[in-house]
Length: 409
Image (cartoon, rainbow, N blue to C red; front, side, top):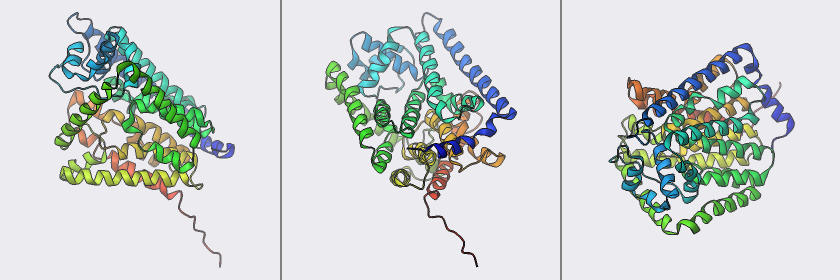
């Protein structure tokens, strides 16, 4: 899908990161990420060393508890909030439901076979390893840049919470690598795996339809059927009715508290933060989602846009189009910044890097602010990330406009 000359040109744009400055930047990124992850794991170890504490109060406790219920032969009990909370034993009155398809329950079941600490450690290592492998084809063999992307601060929230955002991001980037190499079926398999968390993948079909990637579409459909069909045979079709009821309740809760959730980074939260009424903000969000779908379709259909422009646009359209987007989904943004550099829309120079810095940081400032609580969390994400993504998506669209040439006198 991308010819050798264009790929080499994109790789050449990243060469400044192979300098001594790039080496220092990559090293500092690795040290900071190592210190952050180590601190989280040490805290988890200390807390769970107490025999009365089964888990750490992070999102991963829901995955772990659901896995334990599946291991004990009660997979449907994952939809029972009281049963789920009783397994991990933390904040049992808090609303932390299980809202995933059956394939994801299969994925987390092995983690429920062990105690919380080794499960959390394995989850963290696996998520970091997968994102590191996924981004490697796009860093032109430059180790400092690889470290800067694979260990970007944008990944801190998902590592802190034990969320699944890095797994999802790694799957999408791996699919992009397969598409770039015209490995259509492999790309479809990766995309099918993304349906383990389907709400983020709405923009992907528009890209595939625009380019007419029918083999990829077919492979994605078949992978999805296998991933969710086989577990349904094991768990029973009742799983889906319970999931549907859980999603309906969750949607009602979110809409009812739209202007009170402070750790979101989607456009609707930017609008409510600046004073817009939630119903109007939600309507504008749907309009933005439709516009993002159109932008993705136009870019992926155009021969003027390079592959890196298309990839960057998709990675930005996904968070822009999702009304329900927590700060840990900002893991997508570091990869978006990488593709913006590869495309040539931004250069490796101080001003451009300063513009891209918020994408590289993602929701990390919000994560750190949860400990310090210095400012309103929305100033650290919702207030500037969606507008920046809209601007960058507009710059991608500019790439498909006809080039005007000045007539010589």
